[in-house]
Image 1 (tube, rainbow, N blue to C red):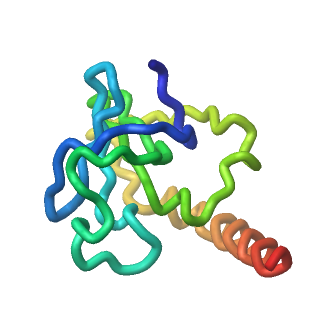
Image 2: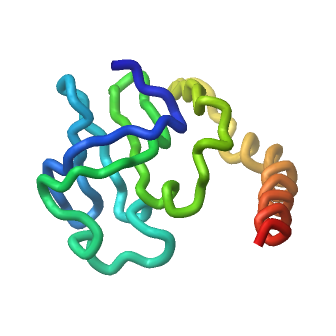
Length: 129
């Protein structure tokens, strides 16, 4: 099965650690729900939200094409209506180049745009409430 960022998939919790839960997605593919992606707000104990062998619906947050690691989220299902996103077909490419040392400049360059986008989304959510 081909996975895409933003895609909603089902899986089974195969293991739980203090930092997150491992989810089998079938076909020898596995993803991780980090503890911060279990629920909106602070999560004291991941066991309050997930149990081993539990079937869960999750959203794919990221796919590291080099290592094959898949980041998953339950929290997105609490806040997003995925039917409003056009198929959620995006590709997230990770790359590493130890010869390039640009620090946080790319983040600083994009910060104002991200703030404007977040403000717009909040205003839309408040208007629809």
